[in-house]
Length: 122
Image 1 (tube, rainbow, N blue to C red):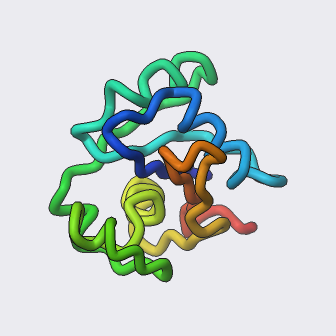
Image 2 (image 1 turned 45 degrees about the vertical axis):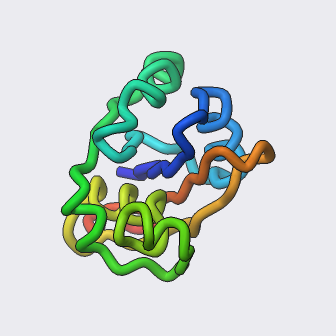
């Protein structure tokens, strides 16, 4: 399973998320989308359009994940260095690893990172 995790500003749209996904995806296709639980409404249109499952990640789960990227804005807002990386890793499960670190959408409203479950070789 490959999870695309997202972080975004309050004014982000599904188009912003999609643009971040395109930047992050490169050669990998996501099989699930993940975003902070309080942002599910922003991601629902993208999940529906791509026909992919969408999971909301609780704030405490995001804050519990150490990420290689260290954004001061993400640390202040969510308690983690990268919301996108934390969401992807949390949804992919224990032992998951990043395939793509946080990438930023061209409009700078959303970020996306990809994680893979430990049970699937890359």
